[in-house]
Image 1: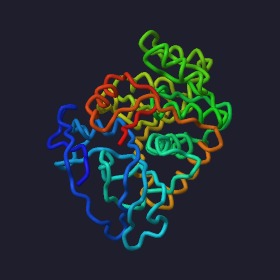
Image 2: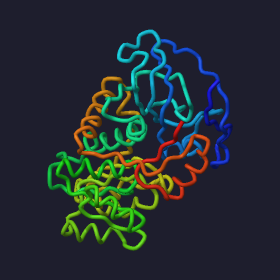
Image 3: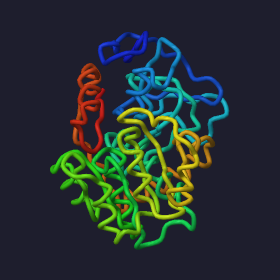
Length: 327
């Protein structure tokens, strides 16, 4: 028996309970992994609250690192004893040990610690697909302006560093002066404290009235309308989260009036649907981290038993960088 965090119904942090669960042997295409550290992400909150409906009971968590204990039939890229890390469906990483599909589990380079591995996979792979695979018409070239909301969050702090390495001129938003300074120190060329300043006129000022090529937005409802107005003609609005709530329905005709804009709603798990794509993206992320282009900041650590407090801090936007649960 091992400890795991489960919910029996959608709701607040109080629904999460630390319980004993039994872990069996891996079947075909599966592995059993003993976790060393676990990543905390906003998708965990969406699944807990019911914004993303899930079957119950549910063990939460999409990201972790650890040691492979056993592999099932057909698994050839991993073996018992390997250091490994993953971002993967189905949920279940809020546990000491689990059996799971092997296709999204990658060997963790020796140069990357378990804590860093747990903190970087979901957020780092998200930054990778946004900057490298979710690009506006004509792509992104050095010198292009992009707007990245929540730039001091887990995905944001990885993205600002990666964007700088790509030569992009990143404009970020955050909710406090301290968060703005943090993101700027890691590579954001411009930061806007949206609690003090309207980001739309500031973006127009920075870009000389032209607007940005792409907006990367995990905030959702609160930033949507003004973000569209930040785009240059043929610009791309790339939505990948709902921290302030889901975007309400809108008439497609407004995209034409605002400059023949493109809109997309991206999810990581479409991009990593095959083992080959997952490994290719992970290799790009591992190279960015081991080369020093991207540093993974772990600013909060909570024991697994304090997962309720971790969720409360995340939802209150009191966190910066990455947060992990320790086991």
